[in-house]
Length: 193
Image 1: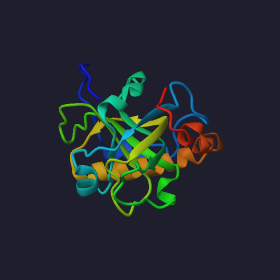
Image 2: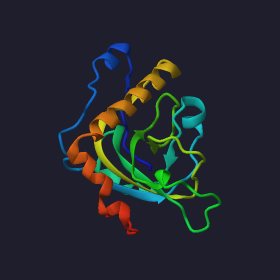
Image 3: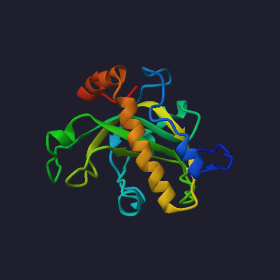
Image 4: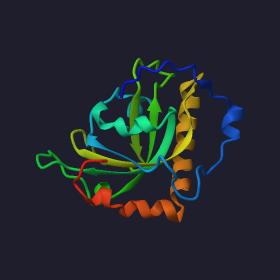
């Protein structure tokens, strides 16, 4: 996802910021512009998520992300995602791995890594036995966790990523969010609206 908008420098994460973060975010049920539908084949990204941060991410192609243009701020989001194999997949995923699973998504410039373009990276909150590059992914973005931040260390970034995961799980545990695990979007093969 590319952007021509000039952005200001992100806030720098501090320990005091982390200590004041809520464990649940968003209203009791999703409000506009959510839910936002995303779909497309999973592509290789920078390779930093799993190797450097212990948080492997699935990246959708840029053309799959225009729906996120309705969101005006960079940061971390939560929702549900589902991986489905293509007919010519070289390995099979388990039934659990193809179910609808919770996810967190980073939308932004990743200032710690000084990205030159905006990206949307999805981390599905499940430990997969193998990668799923080339498989199809659908995601429903249901809410916003926090703004994009810069970090003074990799450890501080990892600490916030781990907290983001827990906040996402807590926020998605509410009944109105759980209904989205059986949303028709996941059962259909239609492209997002």
